[in-house]
Length: 305
Image (cartoon, rainbow, N blue to C red; front, side, top):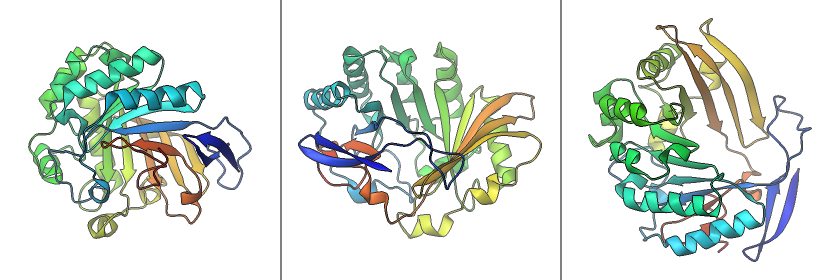
């Protein structure tokens, strides 16, 4: 079911009022509508990924933190703010700006969930952030356990190295803040064997969680290398402990659980796949604050403020 929320920045928007379900045909649990706000700190990026979903929606503006604060306060006071995710481009092109935004958000409420997504540029500077240990998570994109292959995927050597990851992990008080994000794609991490190799690698780094995401079919490169994650995660072996398989109608599905590594460590994992559906553009699941200070009804969505 969808529920219309009236007068969000003067617009009426449709939002879902149900929780994800373990039964793809039934959604019995209701929830108060809420939105995650994605903040594109910048469209600048050190990487040149061939699967980049941001290529078609760059605006190359300069973020206005005062206006951003107004938007976050507005959503927070209306009870619509689920959390804030800082992304790009690559937000760590401007680490001082990221730190300023995080400080601003926690002045509004120190309990707001704040996530940072990065490919690891200037990764060690994260430890200089005033509220780094209050972050809900740092999502570090690392698409292969081999250093050179990972750099070739990004077409950049300025991404987080193993030493960078270990350095930051050792400097964090909360050892579960860093989550690795890994794309599932043909020719790279594309089989159960490769999934296990990646999880074993993550475990050796001392990281507690790795998320595997199917490619968004945004261009020919992504379409050619797309893998339906069910081809892998429906055939797990005894080292995996599957917890849930969740569905959000035609929009997306995901699984999560635990994996016992070759060093007898437990690493959390999840896998997610966004689907192509006719009704997805009829509901707003997130808002996007662009680097030229517009609020969109989702990535590539309409301007609502």
